[in-house]
Image 1 (cartoon, rainbow, N blue to C red):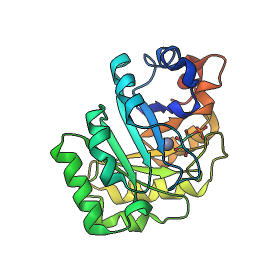
Image 2 (tube, rainbow, N blue to C red):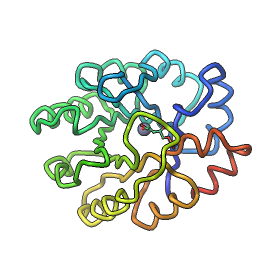
Image 3 (cartoon, rainbow, N blue to C red):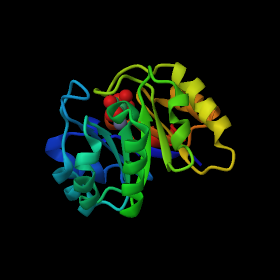
Length: 213
Ligand code: DX5
Ligand code: ZN
């Protein structure tokens, strides 16, 4: 069954515990968007809030690093309790450094994910597919919640599903997910759906999450 990852970016930061409590029993993952104001034109939060979240829920902590130097900060997010650290291909763009970061995460018993922006083709990921635990397809330009789904993400999901063969990576999609785009992503082969505004702005969050399954 598809896993749902509500994105903390759309929560109320002044009532974070209340918002996490409202979803934590209905979803598998919690998606944590880190933005540095450099890789993307927005600033969200860093690792100290993650370590507080880690104390108030048992969900799998899915950390999405939209930052320019993921290797430099990886240890901070590991220490804060990340279960998965996903970094952007575009932030490193060097095969050897990407392999090193994946290895580093695995040595520290954290799952490794790699993400591509809407304009980046799937084939850049070919050298890493044997080693990676998850591929995150961005279906909006990273930086902000509440944008519309870019449909070319569906072709990328299908391509990754075809490429998987006996590999074990999960396919996650992030941006503009609602009940309609969720169905399209599931049909294409997505394993994990990130949803920010659709879940947190809903009157009934439990119902919103169920409508994505
Ligand atoms: C965007 C973030 C997303 C964002 C999704 O850069 O990576 O995780 O929270 O928000 P929605 O679901 O509202 O598009
Ligand atoms: Zn994200």
